Length: 215
Ligand code: DC
Image (cartoon, rainbow, N blue to C red; front, top):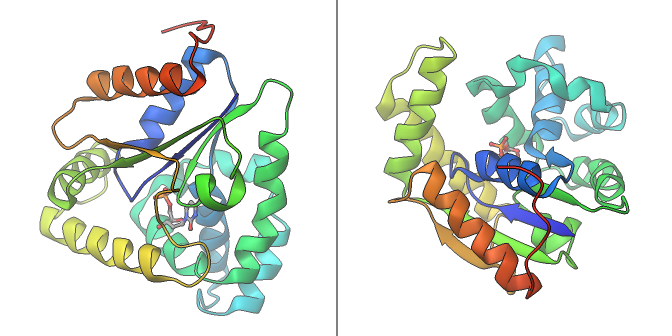
C-alpha cells in the first residue's frame, strides 16, 4: 500500500505520516528532508541557493544517511529547501530516490508537496493535509522553541506565508492537492484526532480494513 501525504509547511503532515507508517508497519520517507539536505549543503559551502547547477550537483550526491542530521529540521534548512526545490533539475534528480523508496513490496508512506501529483500518482491513498496559516505558525513556533531555536511567532507566520506562496506558485510540481486526494483540515484537530481521521481515510480508500501492527 502506498500512502501519499501532501500539504503546506507545518500542516502536521509529517507527524501524521510517521504515525500512519508505524500503524501499518510501512517504511516512511519525509521527502522534505531531501530538499533540506540539498539546501543545507549549499549553505555550508557558502553557495547560492538560486544557483541551479550547484544545487543539481549536490542533489545528485544525496544519500539516505544524509537525512538523519537533526539540523535539517531547523528554520534555515526549511527556508532554503523551499528555494532549491524551485529548480526543476533538482526535483528531477531527487525523483528516482523517492520512486525507489516507494517501490518496495510492502509499499510506503511518503509525505511532501508533490507525492500524490508527481512522485506516486498511482498511490492507493492520497491525503492533502491543511490547516490555517495562523495555526501552522503556532505549531511551528512551539516546535522550534522545543528545539531551542529563538522564536518570534510573527516572523514564523511571515516565513510560512512566504513559503506557501513559493511552494504553490512555482512552475515545477507546485504544491497542490491531487484530484483524487482526500482533504484533511487539521486546524481544529489535535494530533490524535488527525490520526484517527487519517486512518479512517486509509480504510475507506482501500475499502477494507488494513492490517495494523501498532498504535
Ligand atoms: O515539508 P518540509 O517543510 O520539510 O519541506 C521543505 C521545503 O521543501 C518545502 O517548502 C518545499 C520543498 N519540498 C518540495 O518541494 N517537495 C516535496 N515533496 C517536499 C518538500
